[in-house]
Length: 361
Image (cartoon, rainbow, N blue to C red; front, side, top):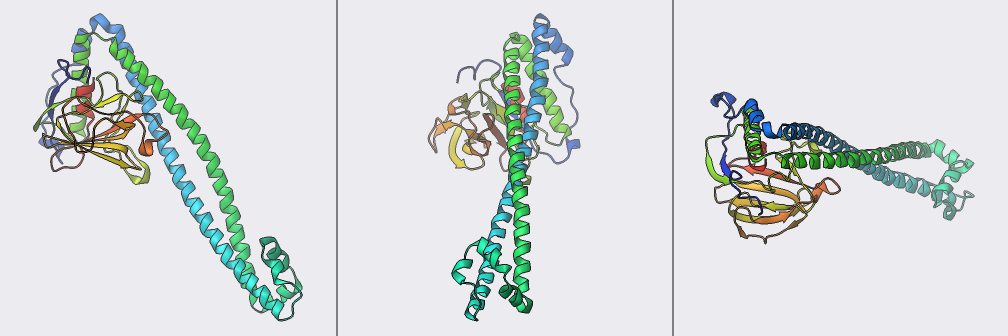
């Protein structure tokens, strides 16, 4: 809860949903870049470092997003091939059973091969070369031989492809680790640079970034404005989280990203953004998650927590620690972060990035 209710940290959250950007007339921004530069004149070097660090973090975050999608795609490919291998192995067993049955019939008709010898794959191969079976094949067994040859050829090809995919996955997993480390370094650099800004510089920088994000959202028909829902605070201590506008980024299974990933240190406290009631959830996708049903009528979703700090159904106050940052669910093995969503009353998720910029800077 430390730092959450400091003056200027809580602000009025304004959100609405529109389908037509033209319904929202352009408005002049209250804070300009020149005003930020003027307010930061006494910490110009620190501001330059912060902006450079921000750009480095965004580049690292996008690279990490890219490699995550690569990993997901290769894992899906590996699962498909593995399924084909298993299905093909089943088909192969059926064919071999059929051939063994034919061999037994030959034996019963006076053939020299003992059926007990042909129960292994190598024995079946050997038996297929005998004159007895080749003669039988000429009058009805050739189809089984052709099926066996085709099934084994397909299985061998699938196994080669599976091995290659496993090798590819190991390589991309290594790239993922490297990208995750790059993002961690960039996050720490950005947060360290932000902490060096003077109070007034930090205040105007946050306001400028918030207004720029809102303008971008309006242009993309994800506007925010007009419905007052009460004060809103950052899910993390301001200045101790880094994030980009990843709304709409591709996700595994053909999904698109419906929130903002707030990167922070492992086990960093996670706060209730408003007063309300919580519901805890666990799933393979979101891991340890919290749904916050705010008294304002809004619903907030926090995913990938390492642990909870509240009980299911508890009433919570704004700024209360509800959990700790982690990488549970399908984020396992990745960078610790909270996937955060905003759902206005009676609506699906809206882009939380502009709101978070205003609260977390």
